[in-house]
Length: 273
Image (cartoon, rainbow, N blue to C red):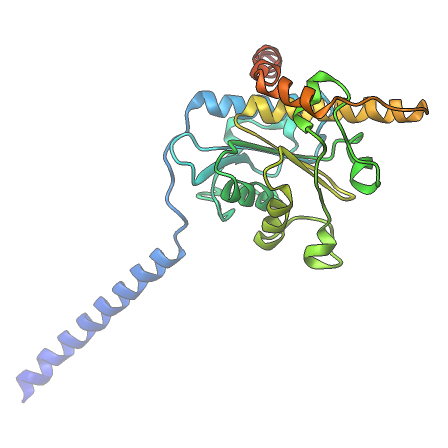
């Protein structure tokens, strides 16, 4: 009996320790974030840095606004900077996310609260490779007015016949106007539909593209188009917009030659400093 009790003294702690170890391992697994898609292409990271700085250079973003791109190794991951003024973004700021807006490794960095704009658009639109969210000043009036934004010159033909408007009140009533949850992001992506961009009432715009040059180029020329349209409306009289067929032909011909020429300029200006 004594021998049995002696053995029990050693067996019980061992079993308890094994159980605790197993529980601890399960807890660690439960707390672990999604798996990384691995190191992103360094050139893609440089493109993303250049996109942030270019959008700032052209006044499309200031200390607010953000741009993202799908990971080159996995379409279910995307890259976006931590919460920092776009002009200041470096490689150390780039964070990898899954399509739920969950970071792979924050490493002490803060996050944009509106990362769900990007996550939910990527989830709903497999064709989208890059997303820009900005508060482009000339565009905002068209999100709060009954006057629709329309293409007024060839560089903005991608607008087509107009853009939808996302009103956050329809999804959540009175809010702080930020798309800071998956539910609000899904509502925005739903209003975006198959358009290239969606206006956000009293807030800004979300712009998509099949690459970073497209999302950046569209963001810049959307602002230019809005400014020109406002000037034309201010002149009085009738405004002659691009015919829908003209817009279709411009886009069909390669939409500003895929922004290759301006992107070469913008990227060089952004990275040579």
